[in-house]
Length: 248
Ligand SMILES: [Zn+2]
Image (cartoon, rainbow, N blue to C red; front, side, top):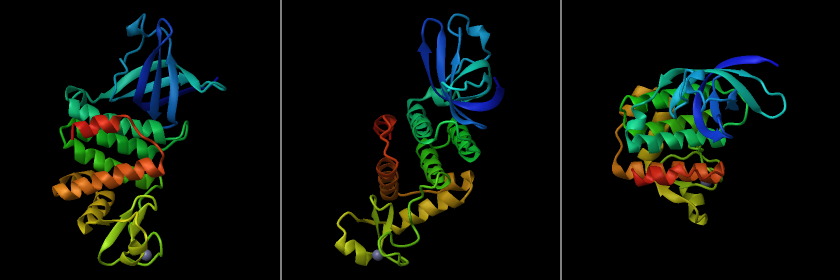
């Protein structure tokens, strides 16, 4: 039985039987993994970390061959994003981010780029950056990494380049030119600024992306496009979306 060590973000924990706990992690080296921490509720000092939500930990585990539920032998706290837990709004937005990882990252498949991105997002959230902006930047960069980027360079129907006015079609996953939009009633007009801001957030570093100011209308359009795009193409409906929108 191999003993492995990695750094991991806590996605979810729940009690198991009398004294144990099951934890879902998103780890740097093995992707999304599940583990059991035996006896942690009877003797909390057995593990150095309390496995709080929004924290990264170093875990040591015995790799389970068949069940996929690894036995965690050690769990040490690396970074605790405790400011996130102090406010309802940052809890809601961070929960959405954690839900996306839980729903969309494949089981036991390493993706260090996503791991680094998620950590950066939580760190910005923890240091008081605008929660809505952080989640928006995260989603845009995340979609690009996992290969689900909306098509923004040319028409999703006829492939022609789009110069001026454009429409967005959630089902087709991208922009539609004015000619195609005329015969396709699922396309809706989209501001140039919305497209430009997606491209800016996708291409620039965190600091620049977070500095970008957006008008209320563009924010609204971006939120509509991003969340509906995710729900339609990735077929998930995170419960935390409602909670997040309630606090927007
Ligand atoms: Zn077209």
